[in-house]
Length: 80
Image 1 (cartoon, rainbow, N blue to C red):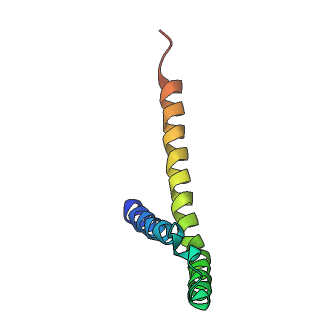
Image 2: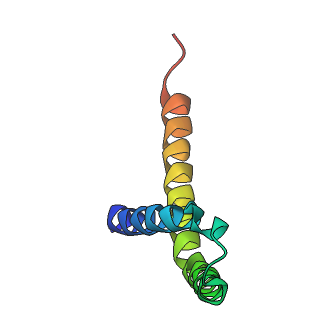
Image 3: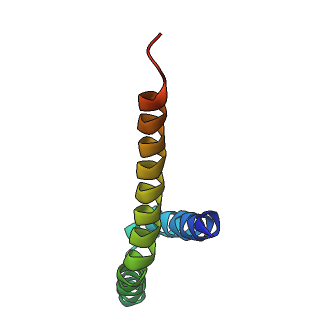
């Protein structure tokens, strides 16, 4: 489930990065349309923040579990 969510978020971020790096803003034609697109883009970023934060939280939990297992395995290794 984590990898599915991660893939969805990464795909979404990639798509939004493409939009954010578009240089059509330099053309002063249709400024009102560009302002509307920008507002929509900002709203979408805000709306997806919880989803991105959830994936990051799961990642952090998994890293913590992996770290705990590593420490426990080191503790259980007898001195040679």
